[in-house]
Image 1 (spheres, rainbow, N blue to C red):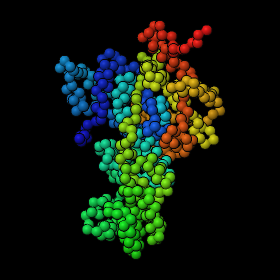
Image 2: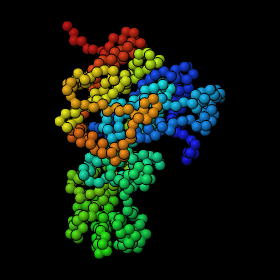
Image 3: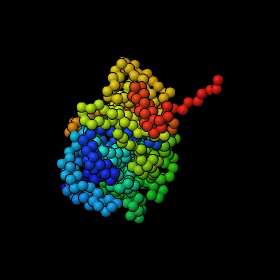
Amino acid sequence: MKLAESDSLALLTDQYQLTMAYSYWKTGRSEMESVFHLFFRRQPFGGGFTIASGLEAVIEFINGFKYSESDIEYLSSLCGSDGQRLFDPNFFDYLREMRFTCDISAVPEGTAVFPYEPLVTVKGPLLQCQLLETPLLNLINFPTLIATKAARLRLSAQDDEVIEFGLRRAQGIDGGVTASRAAFVGGCDSTSNVLAGKLFGIPVRGTHSHSWIMSFDQEIDSFYAFAKALPSNCIFLVDTYNSIEGVKNAIEVGKSLRENGKEMLGIRLDSGDITYLSQQSRKMLDDAGFQDAKIVASNDLDEYLVAEMKYQGSKVDIWGVGTSLVTAKDQSALDGVYKLSAIRENSKQPWEYRLKVSEQISKITNPGILQVRRFFEEGEFIADVIYDVNTDISNGCILIDPIDSTRQRYIPPDALGEDLLVPIFKQGKCVYNTPSLTDIRNRTLSQLSFFHTGVKRFVNPHQYVVGMESSLYELKMKLIREARKKVNPNYEGPITHRHPK
């Protein structure tokens, strides 16, 4: 599919967003003020942290949001179950003239975030806020998932180079490009995706595949031919027939290159026992005088395999990771959601805080107009507090785990901290200077360096302290009791077990 230049992305949404928007308009509720928060409930990959990504795409989407005439024409063709037009034609005039006037705050890309913390806050007319739900989730969920996977690979590879190799296995064109960018945000050094290199300025890497070698009668002839074509870009794939023999051939061609004033950059291993083969290859290369030649490894790698091979003494210098990275192979999606948390008739009225009640405590949402403050001491992040912007926490606060109220922590008044959500749009105008992609990547690496090593473990990670400010928590409990009492007038609160006298 190719969008015409005159088309927009306004229809990148679910139909129920438009039916709700229409109903708000039809019932005179479209201009009510509201607050929505985008957050997730569970850490991906069973890990201890998540890396926020996708904000730049959100900014581009909102800046370019409009309903084109082709959008209106399509919407006017939709019918309800009675066969009649779904929308009043006057609604289309409203959509044509609508321009976003929302205030939006978000955590910068590359920020480490945790469950229930707002990644994005949207405040503005109810209809406008509602229309942003699906596109914001689409633009945030996937890149955040991939950036987190890449950050885990970055940790496992330590100081080694990591190349994102996954375009051919990615979920479509947009999935491939988005994944390449998010992988760089998470800490990858380069990509094989040339389009991503062009669009985002990510360094691109690549040499040749098995088909190049197989097109010649002899492996060594293919190496010589490649060296002649690209003498300054020679990393030879050595496992087409026999890896050890392939290394011998690479060394022979490498000597020929050196005689002509060029250097072989390295070899690539794509199958077999890579730890063993890398050890043997390193010895062969060093003995032949190619101490600076790099060993590249690929072949269905992930953070667990990379960490294990390094533990076993692998001599790999560069890791090429494809499928497991760009598809987030062991988790299909981030469970991000977008929920209403406050509403009022207009700016002269007080806010009414709202929450979604569920039988599962983990699915009950947080009320209020929220901010997240991260505290640190002695060069380490120690805790995050989710609080209402109308609450002063400068005199200290108590954090309460939203899932387990017995887990609490006191933060003193002199604790150092910073708010994570920063202004992105004010009255529909972008006020945020988007950093370079390299700066975003550096933020990821910096953020991870300030967490205790236990938080970064892949298996049974330490649970970083995240809690609700105590008055917000008490308000949440009060609203839950009120909501449940509307359904059951006899509801008095949690069931308690009393010991018999």
